[in-house]
Structure formats: C-alpha cells, structure tokens
Length: 119
Image 1 (cartoon, rainbow, N blue to C red):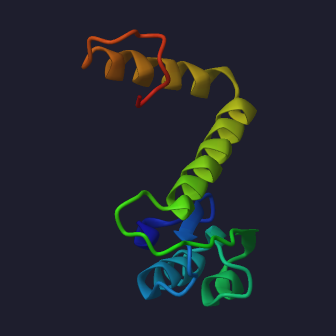
Image 2 (tube, one colour; image 1 turned 180 degrees about the vertical axis):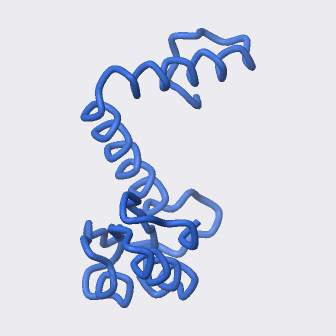
C-alpha cells in the first residue's frame, strides 16, 4: 500500500512491460511519502524511469495462452532471491519469524514438513 509508505519503506514494483499505469502510480505515491522504490521491469520502460533502482527483466513470450509464462517464473525467482537476501541480512529475529510462518503453514497440510515454504 503505497499510501502508507514512510521513509523507512522500500516498495518493490513488478511489471513485465513496465507500462502498467497502476504500478507506476503506486511507485510515484510511495516516493511522495519518502519511500525508496525498486522496479523489476523492462529496461527503459516508463516504470524503470520513475523508480529509484531498477532490476532489469526482459522477457520474451511465445504467445501460447495455455502454458505458464516464462516472465511469471522469472518474477517469482527474483522475488524469492530478494526475500531470502533481506531475511538473511536482518539476522536471527527475522529467521525466527520465517520459521514460525513455515511451522504455521505446514500445519495446514499433511505432506512432509521439510518441504519448502508455500509448496
């Protein structure tokens, strides 16, 4: 929620094309409240131009609507890398919170609790 951003907030925006108006507007609103903004998007796109930091993502789709898009998997992989890096850099308190979340989620399924969170 960009409208509740503060100078301590980092907003991460995702758009494969970089032209999703709602995403661009969210970045602009967050910046008005002093937030840092990171865009994961196409280079030289409108979103790339407004964000403070850009992680370039250039995805080429084949147009087949019946199979998962490669760009979706690319975005998920980037998000996973960011989340892991941030959690590890914040130390034991965050890792304990992640452990609790995993334990809570694992109680909802009957599978092996050693599987990845969200599997």
